[in-house]
Every structure is written in C-alpha cells, then in structure tokens.
Image (cartoon, rainbow, N blue to C red; front, side, top):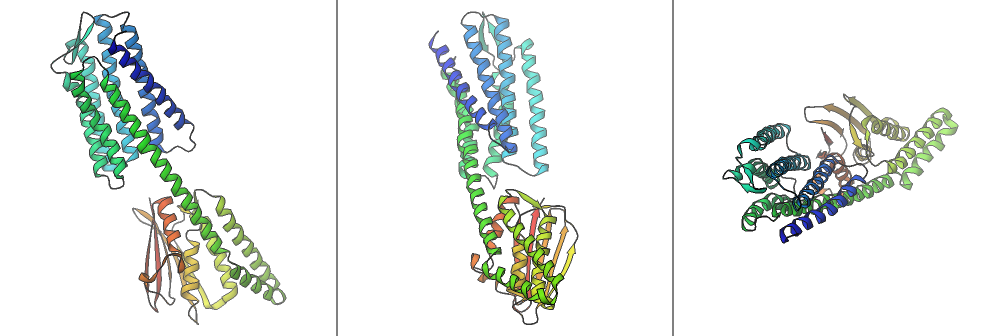
Length: 418
C-alpha cells in the first residue's frame, strides 16, 4: 500500500469511527429537533460515503479497469452532490427563513441538483468531467464545472449564515469554515494529486458543525431550560404566598356560618387553584389557553369572594385554540387586580380579551386601576414581568407589551406568534 492509499484509508477509518459515534449520540437523544434529525441524515450519509470510498481504495490495490474507475467515480460525484443537498436541508432547518425565501432557495437547490446529477450520468458517455485511461482516473478540462452545484449551495448557506439575525458569531464562523474549506481543498488537491484532501476537508467541516453548532446549541437550550424552570418555580411560589393563603382561608371561615354553600365553593376553588399551581412544576411544555383561562377564572373567583363588588370582570374571548406556557397569564391578571384595581377604594373593572390575527394569537389584559410609570418597573420587585417575559419569549417566541397611564389604568398585551 503506497503513501496515498495509507493516507486515504486513514482519513476514511477515522472519519467513519467519529461520525458513527456522532450518529449514535444523536440517535439516543429523546425529543430530537427537526434540525437534529436533518443533521443525523447528514452525518450518517457521510459515514456511508467514506465507507464506500474506503472500499474503493482497498479494491483498487488489487483490481482496476477503465469501467471500474468510471463506475466508482461517477458514484462519488453523485454522492458528493447529495451530501451537499443534505447540508442545504440541515442549514435551512437550523437557520429558518421566511417561507417565501425558503421556497426560492429550495427551487434553486433542487433544480441545480437535478441538472448536475444528469451531467454526472452523462459524463459516463462524453467524459466531460473525467475519464479513465489504463485503469487510472484522469481529469478532463471541464472537471471544475462538476463542482458547480456544490459551489452555489455553499454560497447560499454562507450568505444565509452571515446575514441571519438570530445566528451567533460562533455559528456564522462554523458554517463559513465548512463552506470555504472545499475551496482550500481544491487548491491542495491540485498540489497533492491522489490524496483525498477533499474528503478530509469535508470531515473537518462536519466535525466543526457538530461540535461548535449542534453541541453548543444543546448546551444553550439546556441552560435556557434551567432558567425557564427556575422562573416557573419563582412564579409558582409567588402564587402561594402565606398572606394570600391566610386571606383566602379567613374569607372562607367567615362565610361558613353565613353562607355554607358559598364557603364550600370557595374551598373548592382554592383547592383547584393550589393544585394548578403545584402541577405546573411538572409541565415542561406548553398548555392550551383554555386550561390557563380556567386557572385565571379560579383565581378571580377567589378574589371576588373576598372583594365582591369592588372587582368587576369582563371576558371577551374570541379564540381559545392556542398554546401558552403554564402560569404565564394568570400572574398578569393578578398584577392587574392587586396593583391596579384594588389600589382604588371603589375598585374597578378587569377586562380579558383574546383574538387572532394573521401573525399571532393575542391576549389583552386591561384594567382601569391606578396605573403606574412603565419606566419605573424594576424586575420582580413590582410586577415579576422579567420571569413572565422570559418564559413567553423562550418557550414560544412570544412578546409582552405594557402600556399604563397614571389614574387611568394599565394594558398588558401578549403576542403568541404563529
């Protein structure tokens, strides 16, 4: 075995081993994201790609012919293009764009892919890219054109990474390295013919994508999940503070001799309220708005039991069929009642409205309470909006907007984008 064959075989063996480890690692992960599924196909196919090339390297030491060379290199050209197509699929799932933009990129990619696969097959007959002579692979003058699909796709992925607003600098660099390495490989391939430098460059690029894009994203998401859970615990604790429990139980106790039936209803509502708060800790995902609305209604019934005519509630529920983080809206309602309406001696009116527009499901919680200066909000000291905003933004890419006027009231608008 000559030095070239040893180098090529070593690249293939090391690459196959590491890629199989990555494949198993992704396979064993529960609840894989769409981009992770695409990454799985991407690295698994490249492991297969290297295995085919390793087989070719070994066979070529003992047998070669013009037909053998043409057949194998044609399959390599086809697999190279398919590998780049998988990169495009992975990149566009990792860095999602508007549907219209994605459709344009997809049409360009698939059209070029079909054209170059057809050209690879045609090369068997016209040898426009390569040919075989005495059982040896020989490049034709138009060989560089065979890389056309790959160059265009690399350019699209590179532009997507560089101009995508939600991609970090590290991710931009990782995708850029993957897209630019093949250009370096082409130069080196001409300097050192016969060495599988192109395969080595792609393998290095795959490792960079896996370690510096996928692994780091998983670490980031794990950290965000911990922050979300911490925020959920803080919100849950804030809902069952001792003074609230005492006040509710005192109201129920007062009602027992006067109106036992109403006291029983109050106790049932209080039980449901506590159960909903405690069960929210075990919910890792989103809940239907209908469930959150039931919890809000339970809380309001407890406050109505205590404050009666000082608290009026108006519901304008136009849509319910959407998902929200558990205990994300009830604290907003509680803030409106406690910090707005009940600060006025005569009380006031709380309005809860939902509607759907083209881009989002919208929840509006408004009151005609005392109002406040929005600029004066300081995290959890006043409204706990930091936790609420963080959970809504992190868990469902939503947004919270607050408007308030002194002595007129407050409006909190929550957008759950589709």
